[in-house]
Length: 71
Image (tube, rainbow, N blue to C red; front, side):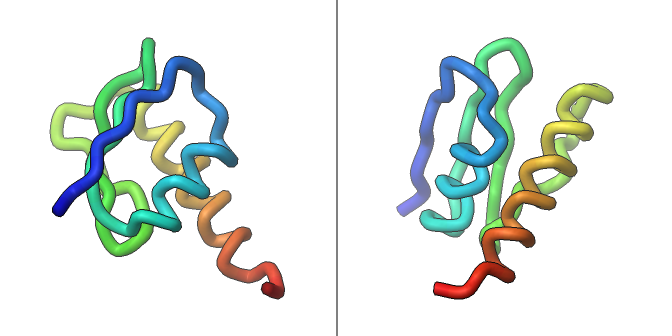
C-alpha cells in the first residue's frame, strides 16, 4: 500500500526522512508540487518545473547522507 503525505512547508531533512522510512508512495509539498518516490528516493517528475527538480535533487542528497550515517 502506497503512502501519501502533504507537507505544509518544505523542510528537506524532514521530507528525506519520510521518503527513506516509507520507501514507496507519494508526497505533496505546498507551493512546489506532488512527487512520487520509490526505492527510498524521489523519482524524476514527469511534468516537473525547475523548482521541483531542485527539490528532488536536494532531498535525494539528504537521503544519501542519512544512509551513510552510522546507526
